[in-house]
Length: 146
Image (cartoon, rainbow, N blue to C red):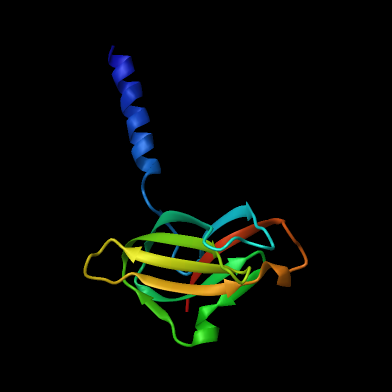
């Protein structure tokens, strides 16, 4: 009976450890990516999202929205950097089809700290501009220190 209790405790502790937010080492880029098959003619309103938990150190960050090698750098495109306070965040990436047969790729960083605002960016992406139609695409975001 004692052995079962020890095994159960070990399983519980390893499960609790898996639930902890990920964190990137200071200065290392952090990624939130998935791979899906994307249509070159998306339907308006179709939406796909995924979220990850991450711990970020207090620092100025630049962010990228990325779809298979096509990377949108908001730091250089829209000037300025994003300061994020130290803490845990829910990092969400979404793709939504439009009536123009493009995708709107949005990214949000929602801090656990209720005194801080959620930061959101978006970019419209046309899969037809790539050389691969109806292919598997890795898409998501990247944060790095600046």
